[in-house]
Length: 251
Length: 224
Image (cartoon, rainbow over all chains, first blue to last red; front, side, top):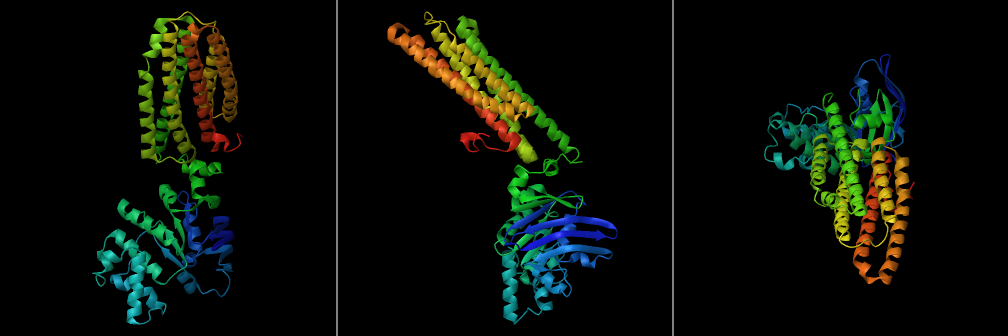
């Protein structure tokens, strides 16, 4: 079974082809990591999976991205609904300048998923628990989200993404701005979340990719060089380019 | 990262150089132990018997280097396999050094008796074992899986010679009980040399793993 499938995907920023013929099949309920040097296209590719690039002017997509066998670039696709199914967490935690509670409730409200007061409160608690944040914030739900630590803010953003019950969670360098303890929390969280979600993570940190992911894709100059089980990529990659990258012989 | 990588390479090269130094030392000690046996030279025998310290020091130093490289650089792929192989080869070489001491001890005892016979098979076993050790380390340096495979094939010759030595000495012991004690020492020595061949075999298997990521131990991959 395949959750996300890209087929000969090309992506252009103006005349520049940033992704070249990417074909990849992401399995459900596993963590897939995208690694590669800066500018290799891994973040661009991640953002094609919920059409986040649509908002960047002058960009163009060729090829197909299928989620559950349906092309998300087909005409008539509801992009808002797509992004509800495919949630995203960014490098810099970006909580709204609202209370902790309202940050998580926000997506539910705008998607008309809020329900009754108690239903809403239940969903907020459930999401905060899933993001392993509940214990730390349960007594201060109505304080500003900007008052908690960076690591907590990032888990709040994960809770916010989970609140609308997505199927897929995209994470773009979710721990790169965090200290090692907060990073470990996020990594543990990713490990726990994969039981319920399909997770794709972009990371510069190869050790992190090795620790959290089941599959790893190595990108280089807009191409997908190698995609395989994570243990294979880091102990015995098939491609010399991958070998050079994971052993630090690059550049 | 630009700076860290050459630094890691240097450290890795230094590790491999020390491992080779250790291999050369272990090989020399086997050669000297058997030379001491053949020439009945008490000084040479004593030199091997009491001279294990440099090898033991290298054993500890190499383990320490491997440990630090793993902890500080978190190597991947080929580099990871090279360091894991180095840890194992290090242990094998240390054991070879111990076996050289065991040979020297037996040679010392043997020299207190009249010779049982002219030594032919044991020096030959020693040559084969040293050759295997040498080739295994050469394969390691050159990342040569073919040479490593040759080492694996050599092991059967060594085993065959050991059996031959045992049978021959058995006839001496049956004919003349006064030869039992020195003959047993020769049997022990042949056993030690056969074990050295086993360690060379282990090293060759580690080389194949390091280069091709194939595990050929216990015939898991059919001895490719």
